[in-house]
Length: 366
Image (cartoon, rainbow, N blue to C red; front, top):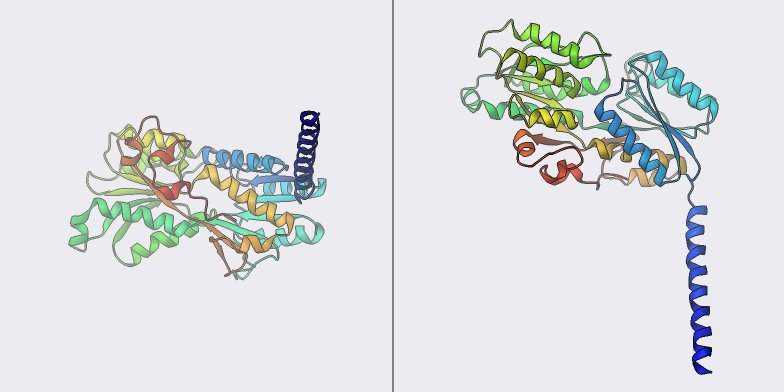
């Protein structure tokens, strides 16, 4: 009889425990302030491996939070970017992550959108806010996110300078062919600031600045442009090639291989194809980058916190800056050819096996 009573008591305790656990789990779901929300990632540029990685990471993080997420690429069209934002706002999206909006219109346009749709939450990436006079502006409640672009640029210049210690010892500038496109997107302009500092100091000399002619086909276009320009120079006149963007860099690399040239090159951003080309052990010596498989997670966290009204958690993140206001930057890291070649079958998914620890560090996130 005592055993039977004990069994009844045990069963009752287990039932009570399971009921309590279930209640806690249900409370957690009920207390999720973003459960059932609908968000979109709206990208000004055409699809590329790094932005597809971003989209995948953004979408997975949203799904983990119980959020429905969509992605829209706008094929380098200002009008498409604006129209897509308006369409998503009109049909009732709760949050929008908008990327690479033009500096000459983004602040005014997004301000107007939020006046018309005050319940909508917006976070931006690589989108600077300035008025018609070029003055820096902010939008209340809108977090602006960037990579540490100036540091990305500077780290690559340092990689190049390290290739030519004799020139540094003689105070001679390193001659660089710069693949750069100013006044195109704000990220490139921010990278120019980091690069230009070395020009001002006389440590580098820019032979000329080149860019693709067709933005919808940046790799093939850059290959054609680079092949024609590099062919004008004699051996030894170009010490290195600095690339502001990895899609452009892939075109440059193909041009160098086609020409049989040994000129070293470096670039910003990274994807599987970049790693494969670096692993060939030829011209492509380094990438300065952030972890694009984490960047979408970071952006989704920020947008989710906006929708939940938890701005204090955003401001508490190590990558948050009070000036100019609601501003966050993703830390940069350099991935070298030597690191890539030190492992087997390296991709962005296992790049952490050879990259420095900073590559997979999440501590900067809110």
